[in-house]
Structures are given as C-alpha cells and as structure tokens.
Amino acid sequence: MNKKDIISKNDVELSEELDGSQKELMELRFQVATMQLADTSAIRSMRRKIARIKTIIRQRELIVESENNG
Image: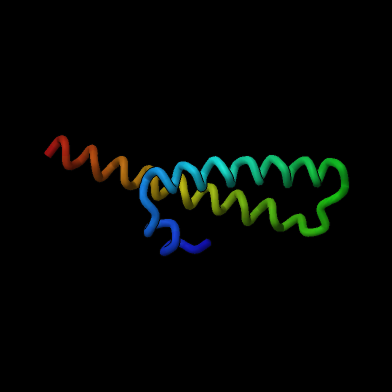
C-alpha cells in the first residue's frame, strides 16, 4: 500500500486499516518466534505501513486543530 492509497481513505477506513495492520504485525512476530516466517523483511514493511497510516492520521488531526484555532 503506497501513500496515495492511504491518503484516499477516510478516517474510519484508516483506523480499521491500522487495527488490521497491527494485528498482522503481531502475527508476523509470532511466526518469527516459532520459526515459521521465511520472509523476515515482511515485519519491516508492515512496521513502515503502520507508520505511514499513523502519519496521515496525525496530519489530518493537525489540519483540523489549525482550522479550529485560526
């Protein structure tokens, strides 16, 4: 999922995507612990996806705050 896909989603979809991604990251960590995960780079890409989603959510929050204050 790239930045354009994340930006095009609304707040509810973003929060659902964030929850799903965090659950998937936890599953990936369990797979690493039990030696079932062959592609360990999947953890890094999932962490980056979560960071992108959180960044977009925070940017939207800041826009709303600036509109309310000014």
